[in-house]
Length: 107
View 1 (cartoon, one colour):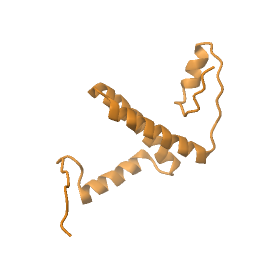
View 2: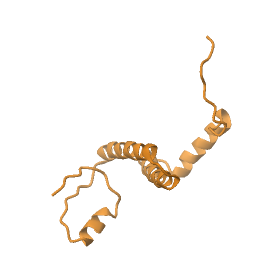
View 3: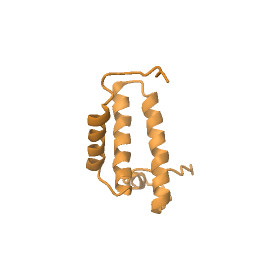
């Protein structure tokens, strides 16, 4: 039996069950859950960076966004609150639309 030891989406156990396969899961305590969310976020970001098509990139960004929803909730906020913080930062510091790459700043 392959060992995965990774956080999976909520319906994965049901999907596995429907194939007739045996499996083992556990419900994580909050501290470990946050750590596994961070691990999964890093995995999805790596997959995004390695995506070769726009379609694949968007699939990975959707996974990143799902993880952001879960992490925001674990930090006592909603994704709307995170979006508000993002908007405030964009107003005060700008976004990344202008593609500015800072080379150096004189001391």
